[in-house]
Image (cartoon, rainbow, N blue to C red; front, side, top):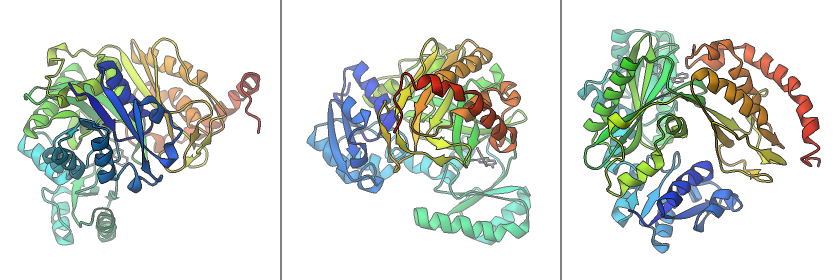
Length: 472
Ligand code: MV4
């Protein structure tokens, strides 16, 4: 087993990783930027080192600095969390070259999963269903036209090196094509220094369903069921749940087997996610997320498996602690991402100081967070306050429990999206499980209900002023 893990990340995920280290008796090391000097994760670790200024390029993305700290403190491994360097093959390679264990897939795998066209080719090779589209990256408009001629409109242009929505554009007719392609190519050029794009048939109103997988160094691969992440806005996930109402037991087994098959064919090692879109009982592979994801907690709640501990076991060269037949999904879990943002003002970020903060508790509640009362949410990173994860025996109980937890959640000093979550938990389509990626856009009543809920819950603040001094 590893001795000392450097966590190359911040906030709640840094704490999540350090918690696993603590349970395994592994020393943890934080690295932090000047903006995170007073953050909980930097205090939680056994050791902490300042990387540099707030901009990620001078701190959380600085490969040389992070490797140097790992050397200085004698860490034998680095956990990259999510975002930042987590899927960067150059970083994984730099770790490999420095003799430091990268807690994630080998750089050779990251090179494939980071290129969406290469990943798609692997899926085709492994006979995992993909949506009709191009099998090669291109920047040639005539080649794109040829493909569209075969697949028809609507179509979606994607960046070969992108993922997660960056630079994608949906086109409904030939007139839109050239401009959209030019825009995507220019975004790809400025972000990745490459012109590679590809095109797919655009599936309207699909569900977004992803399978969690674990793969060790001995060729053992298991899946931990699915998460449905259809409640999104501008490609940013807001609510995730496991399991998905859309999958029968046999569909779950079928898709899970496809995910495992693809992981095997990629020679995948570590924890990962195989992402699908799902519509009318058909599913298509989209991409591989080669990292621990924000929403891993819902899978942990229904399986009881500590995914981060498994990551560390795998990196230590130990076999998976579970076999496929040991994996059982129990009950239902839903996660609400609690952000410091104003859902009534186009989701404008609302960084600032938490003048009053108390998170919910009680049966079935898990709150993963890096904040505390009095903490100032900086304006230089994503303004996520916490992940509120609720477990219940079934979806109905979980939704009711989530409403109760949202009622208990006290956050004073910044605007939050809690009223949006309350409105969604009361939305008939959500309650019926009738989800698709366009949900937030299409449910125009949410805005009105948020206002109603804000007014309904307003008297709470009067009672709270007795226990929290949040006057200026
Ligand atoms: C798609 C799609 C429909 N058809 N591809 C978005 C993030 C990235 N992982 C892949 N994404 C999608 N790819 C095809 N061929 C729908 C999505 C998608 C989406 C698209 C527009 C608006 C919101 C979305 C939310 C989730 C997925």
